[in-house]
Length: 166
Image 1 (cartoon, one colour):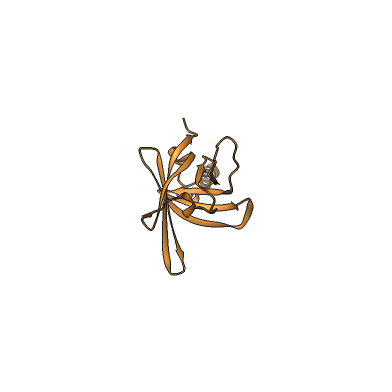
Image 2 (spheres, one colour; image 1 turned 90 degrees about the horizontal axis):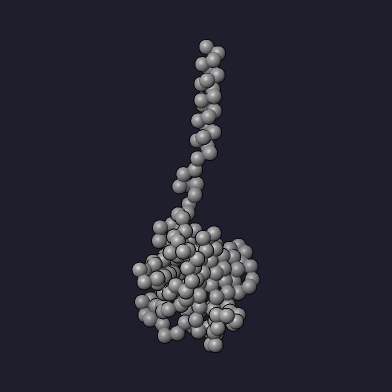
């Protein structure tokens, strides 16, 4: 009798240890980072409320910017850089940067901005965007925000410059 109680106790302890050691999707709210997202993407075009913009500066953070890049990594960090006229990827420093972390849930990126133009953001600014990657190595990121009583939707398309996944 003593042996069966001890066996039962060991079985319960084993079950509890294994059960608490396992994780499910609810304890990990992020899907894996899609490999095709990982890399550096260069600005191609954008729309604001479905109206095409004529220049990058219409959606940039710096009015002097003529182009921009966004980078996503497998370790769930992102960064953007904006460049003025005379942009040279080998030597010109960006005129604006921002960065942070992200998680993935289906086609939604839960973005957390932790740096803005060289300064820490505290608390981090959190927002969601949707993304679509086409077969032609184009990434479209769509973000909607409310300004006053108007909802503004920006859809920016980027072309793949460098993929970190072979």
